[in-house]
Image 1 (cartoon, rainbow over the protein chains, first blue to last red):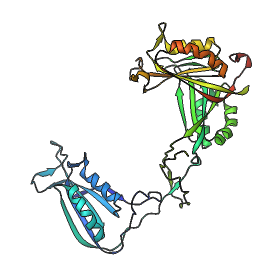
Image 2 (spheres, rainbow over the protein chains, first blue to last red):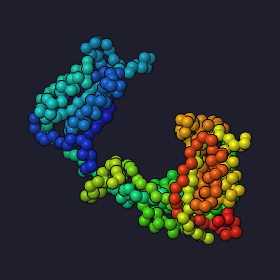
Image 3 (cartoon, rainbow over the protein chains, first blue to last red):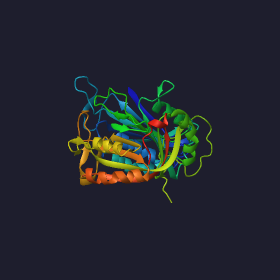
Image 4 (cartoon, each protein chain N blue to C red):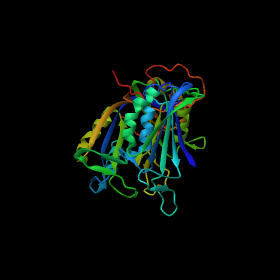
Length: 278
Length: 118
């Protein structure tokens, strides 16, 4: 009567060097460790099962599973069960993982401390068929990831009622930037302003008006932005484009995952790396 | 019509409840910019911020609340911006003014409508 709660497999990504090796178990003798906890237990403010799972993950354990029990009792002889009348937050939880004996011995001390009043059981088992790591997913680096240090900020000032082919101009500009791999854009609506056309835009507090001044702020390399300018020329009939120099201090992004074979990733373009300026 | 020229961008930061002769400060500054024939001026309302005097500007969910941070962005040639600065010295009692060098491209449908450029 155990409901499977969540499964975490350490299919480590090529760039996930923070974890000390996602080792795979081989067929043969190994140790299965089961830890019994009650759901309400916390460790440094987070549920114990979650901090144990994190601990196992970052210590490179081959795999671990958390099971949620529907009823049970432990050393305190209190019955923990789901009951619609008194909704229990102290259901039994079981964490299971399988590892080599050496590894288990190295982990047990800390696990005992984390499990608190819970019970830990080890069992000698034989791995009949080891799990296979699914093919690591290739991290596709978007074309705009070469930005380091010196870059340009382009601000485009247009009016909210400007249109491009039946679409608000600022939305069309964003779509065009996205299609051209421009690193990123943020759109701001002004509360008051006038521009190259000399018209005054005033925002109305109830936001029913669509006659505001709009500013798009774009950051990318000078070459990319200059290559994009002809498109701006075509789309913007009235408005102002302002370039200024900026230094990119940090560019953290989430890489897209695809099922393609992994191309050799270039050093220094790891996910989330912080680029400091020389 | 398209023209490109080097220019300066001036940004003024203050609070939405700041006033100049009974008028919201951003409206007053914008009027002054128009009077001086400055090419572009926009006021933005921020969500949250703090600045000189460590006053925290906080826009509430209620859209009529008046304590949000305001940032104005004013763009024109160096000479035009220099004309504006003495007025800002007078008008902005508590706030920050920053300028930076920029490259500008201006698009306009009809040259006649363009704000006069010195």
